[in-house]
Length: 304
Image 1 (cartoon, rainbow, N blue to C red):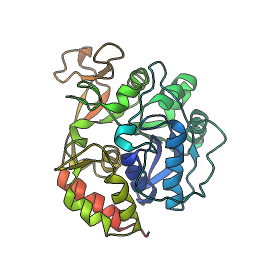
Image 2: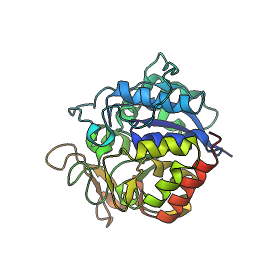
Image 3: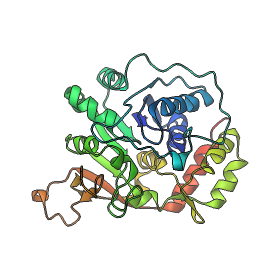
Image 4: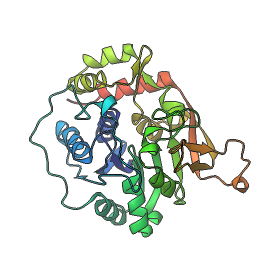
């Protein structure tokens, strides 16, 4: 049985890798891709999503979304992902056209017309999601769960307190976490452990054209170390397919929306507040070796 998902994304190198897995794994039924401003501006994230869809000759529709956060000034991550957001590989330029409706309208239509509940997978800022819930609250009853890349129980990667996706639009994150929909937080607590190792990266390069494409864009990631490169967003797809490889803990997540800690995800780890209630299933540990093996296995099975 396949998992019906929508990806709301801001490609971005690791987003491109996550889309690769979602477009090609037979257990995932990707119904729609919506873009949002994040790693780079929304015109570029939309084009990058189209490039990945075109690379694999898939028919998944792409809809362009929010150009800026709800309230906060927009800050991109081009210093990490490059000016285009996805440098290093020459993608085809005969791209499919995006839908002629906004991401919010496309999200509503896809969710409400589905014959079963959808899993929403945001891997960028949550602006589109917040706008959707604000404008069309009825969709909440038709969403199975949200598996969102973002947040951290410890230090951030944008500021000392905040992870980038939540920092980009903390007000949207607060709306999403207060939506009442079951949420799994796939944050830096696991994504900084499940690094693509140098050994995995070298194998990827010679595997097939997909492996070469991924290798060529991953090596342009500005956030790397001798231990490897974080593929943050890919962990959402890994979680959907192999939850047994990830340890989670239920807790309440609050979002800081102003001040020096803006964008911080504050987890009530001790259960000291909120009368024991929880609003998130937080990923706290991962089998990094299993993640690397799965990543390579997924790519090796792609017939391109």
